[in-house]
Amino acid sequence: MTDDRAQLLALRQRLQTLLEAAQDNERKLDRFDAVERKLIAAVSMAELIERLLMGCRDEFQLDAVELWLLDPECELRRTVPPDALAQPRWLDGYAPLAGLYGNGRTSQLLGEQHPALASAFAAQAGIRSAALLPLIRENVLIGSLHLGSTDPTRYDSSSGTKFLDRLGAIAAISIESTLNRERLRIAGMTDALTGLHNRRYFDHRSQIELSQALRHRAPLACLFIDVDHFKQVNDTHGHSAGDQVLRQVGRLIQQMLRSGDLAARYGGEEFVLLLPRTAEEGALEVAERIRLAVAGRDFSDSPTPLRSSVSIGLAVLPAGGASDLASLINAADAALYEAKRQGRNCSVMAAVKSAPVVTNS
Ligand SMILES: Nc1nc2c(ncn2[C@@H]2O[C@H](COP(=O)(O)OP(=O)(O)OP(=O)(O)O)[C@@H](O)[C@H]2O)c(=O)[nH]1
Image 1 (tube, rainbow, N blue to C red):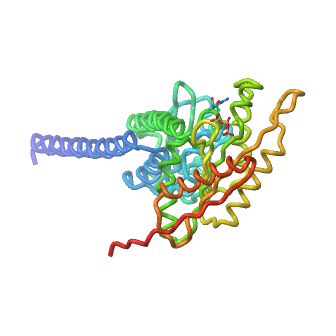
Image 2 (image 1 turned 180 degrees about the horizontal axis):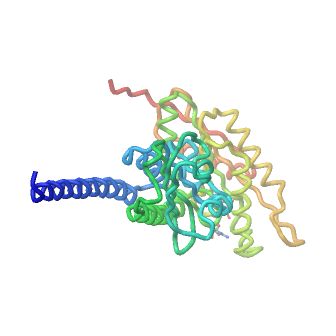
Image 3 (image 1 turned 180 degrees about the vertical axis):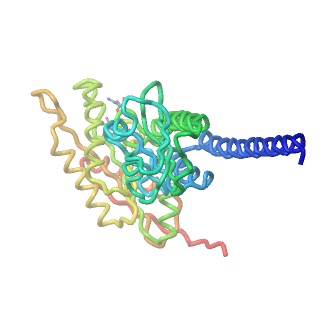
């Protein structure tokens, strides 16, 4: 072989290596691009977390992915249902992040034997190399995404971190914008004065509760609670004292309920409750507990006492009976009217007639 031919061969091999590296990079870029698009498109915090944990693991063929999120006020975790498929590690304080990054704010590649591997993947042994991506918003470290592999050569300090830095930045932006969206969603379902759900949310949830009650042939109770002579409270003690009464009545109601029950402010001085799997006797017991708690309370924060009371109308959708929400609500509303008529500060139960069961087979 002449020198020229040997040089040509070496050049060809070099070209081939470069070509393969370029193709490799392109595939890598595509994978990152696919993950980033999914993060940006997530519509809820639960979905975003699932995409960060499971999406990254599958797309990058990793052996473990961990997500740590700083959440001292428990605001983030309230946006993720406890039974959501993927859960991050919620951090109440900054110390675990400081333990990983110190004062630094850049992606870290951890090769085999790196002491930080064990703490970054507390739940999983056998990770032999990893990339730790700091999640930063407005110069504040808000969390950390850990990509782990059992392959000791997958991440080492000689690899570049450009793609990883970008992924970390997009993950952090996505967390912030999803949190803002969740805040709006929650505000849109919450009554600002009492912190209970608002009527809009009640209208939405009540459809779900009705179909659950029909499917499980379980009773569903509806309670309308109205503060008595509330106009007089406003007129005598002032509007802000009236607000205070509404806030405290809302809190008392909430305290009397089980976790699956629904309480909402229906409007003005009127509250509505839906109690799944609750028949007449149980519903009446809840109503009386609320009524007595309100009647026994002094709502004043001054030496002049401020007493109040509520009237309650109840209706129960009988187990196994089929009906529509409107008739349940109308019956409870009519029972409330009757409670007012009977002199207030009492609970009245209405009967809801069952409509014939319609089946679509
Ligand atoms: N402070 C305060 N008052 C409100 C609010 N929403 C409605 N109200 C007042 O609640 C009062 C309701 O009065 P009415 O509907 O006459 O009923 P009531 O005085 O409670 O009488 P009964 O229901 O018949 O016992 C009105 O004066 C409303 O202005 C609120 O958010 N805050």
